[in-house]
Image 1: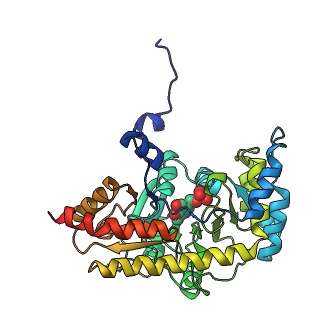
Image 2: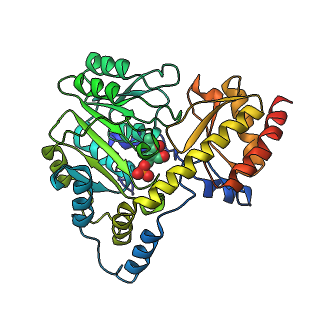
Image 3: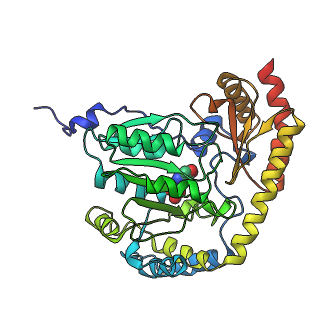
Amino acid sequence: MTHGPRYTALVDRLPASVPFVGPETAERERGRPFKARIGANESVFGPSPKAIEAMSREASETWKYGDSLSYDLRMALADRLGVGAGNIIVGEGIDGLLGYLVRLVVGEGDKVVTSFGAYPTFNYHVTGFGGELVTVPYRDDHEDPEALIAKAGEVGAKLVYIANPDNPMGTWHDAATIQRMIDAVPDGTLLVLDEAYLEFAPEGAAPAIDPDDARVIRMRTFSKAYGMAGARVGYAIGAEPLITAFNKIRNHFGMARISQAGALAALHDDAWLAQVQGKVSAARDRLAETARENGLTSLPSATNFVAIDCGADGDFARRVLAELVARDIFVRMPFAAPEDRCIRVSVGHPEDMDAFAEALPQALAAARA
Ligand SMILES: Cc1ncc(COP(=O)(O)O)c(C=O)c1O
């Protein structure tokens, strides 16, 4: 008998690689910090001062576990959304909730449909629970609702995923298109509607919430517009039986009480949110202008990032990206063709946007050389 754990057959099969390399890792490897951290769609504008105050106040109470039901936050969200508290589950970011959801419904060999090149953390969870990913391509830089639904029906998928607005392209569909998608979900399939960037989208990107609709679960987060990515607070809205099922498997004390307090205060500061939305919109315009100044185009965005089309293939965009990183600008890019002709630049403070505007022409010249 050899020593050490006997892994499951599934874990033995999984690749040993760590799929997500954060900017801190890159900084350690490079031995110097980035000048502009505009690669992970975080909100440089930070949380509401009221959230910071609430979190500071809660710091001395952190010897206590958080409320396992996230009761106050769930009540406040339910009130805001016009649904019951039983329709809301709070979890460790959308990422954490996606993991729980996949664990709830995906077993070995079950099919899950997503877009080729869409949000990779979802794929990571599906693979990690033994599910089989089936993908459909983007269409004109948008996720393709009709193709996703058709494929889900064809393969008998347990889950079909769409982000609206989308990451990495920043494009979006209107509410009517998403509602048509919900109405067409095949029997036996659950639609995962990831609305991480919804607060940045124009009015009319989200269909009305029907809390009793068992065909869809919607996920939202405090990581983006509320500027609290490091606090790890997300929530899902769905029919009560599905929401209750999370209690069978979730980490009941997974929410830090500092984060719960911060999210609750953030939710009540609409003025701060509006201010952030304004800054994001201005910075998106600035990124589009920088692209234009360099003879490039950018995609209209409903998020806090902009996909800039580098005008050639993925290899060229990867060179541009490497040259930007070499100039201390942290940005990322789509990994699937043909979307990988773009780089993805998160919005930042005017100084971040200046640093990007200064580095881009140099990076383009170096990539062309
Ligand atoms: C589409 C999408 N969903 C979810 C997340 C992660 O959200 P959270 O921080 O709540 O886990 C991101 C973050 O980049 C995202 O782009």
